[in-house]
Image 1 (tube, helix red, strand yellow):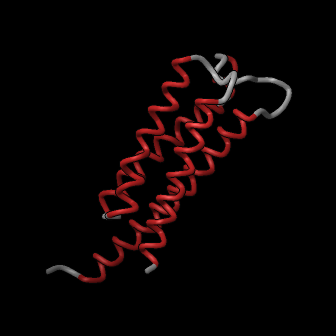
Image 2 (tube, rainbow, N blue to C red):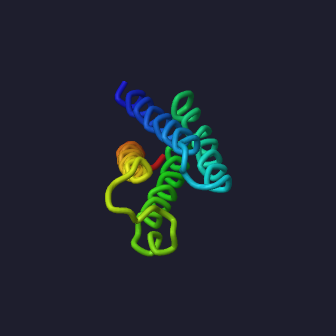
Length: 134
């Protein structure tokens, strides 16, 4: 029961990430065609993990989800770094924008998903260790 709730939570976090990326790609003034294409590609990249978490949350699906969200966390941290501002990768204006909100929201969602992955895989390792060698 708890495992299915964690898998549903993981799928829901993934669905919110997809929605956030699609909305950001369609928002006016949010980068050029290339940036919009990258956002849509990132959305599509999330779909296999969401499907796997919803239908068959195996340890492999959780591990792949962890890898993908670790990469997303790194990407968001790079884009939020001061160097990204000087390179023109975000607005650097005098206050938060919807893009900033999306970036910080994506960062938070990546952290939540990585916590879920850690809980599930740690519990799985504990179960394997408790069953002992065969």
